[in-house]
Image (cartoon, rainbow, N blue to C red; front, side, top):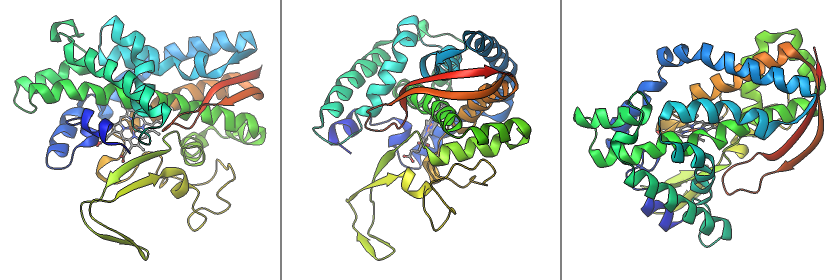
Length: 324
Ligand code: HEM
């Protein structure tokens, strides 16, 4: 939505077109293929089990910082394999990177751009030897050595592993928990029939999509149901609008975990469909599976929505839980 962010982001996968995009994405996908995700499952579950046990014992907790951030911040930052400075700042940078994509001149966009420049400077000057050799970022440089990417592309693509992986997943889980706290009968239903878990996750992502919008620049004229758009125009894809389209979803504003919402567009659609979608769902499912076993009911004590250019979610979500 603004020229400066576009310029800073040149070479990043989400900002590129085919054929470059397809080539970058083949490399990006490697650590996120089903085999690699399967290998992660037990580690995620063990960590999550312990965290949930501690929180349930407390009875009341702030679910964004204490629960929803836990797996993305402990596991994902480790897997990417940045230095301690990178791990410490990643969430802050990721928030700024998304804010930077907002409307031109908006104060949140301007402060986002400052933060994004910090993140780009860190990645740009990070010595390759400082990376964890088993991490995803180091894998990008190995792909460059093999001739699949340029060194410059490998460096820029570290941003694709870091920027979009955190707030999105954190708020995906945070929003789902808020919905369950607001709709206790849906929680009971899920506990009685845990097989509904995948549907519940898709339904929560549909109704409260963590990514509010991304932009596109049209490469050709297009007629959208009678609305004429022209090459060079900017378009905003508002995912919540598609996800609450009453022509597709009956009673679209309601939260119904038995609904088949698999075709929602919370992860986008087409060639830029979210590349971290399976990892995000695995993280959310891991936490929810443990919660439904250990928590009989969730009560909303307090919530505060986050003010952000791209992310819809909560800054604060205080929950009181009754152990199962
Ligand atoms: C619930 C969590 C998530 C949501 C709601 C989400 C949402 C999205 C959306 C809407 C897009 C499409 C953007 C567009 O079409 O322009 C996208 C793309 C992308 N996402 Fe996610 N995302 C999530 C988690 C993740 C994670 C965990 C990662 C990284 C491991 C990730 C990495 C990416 C990348 C790299 C792209 C660009 C793909 C491409 O250009 O081909 N996302 N995401």
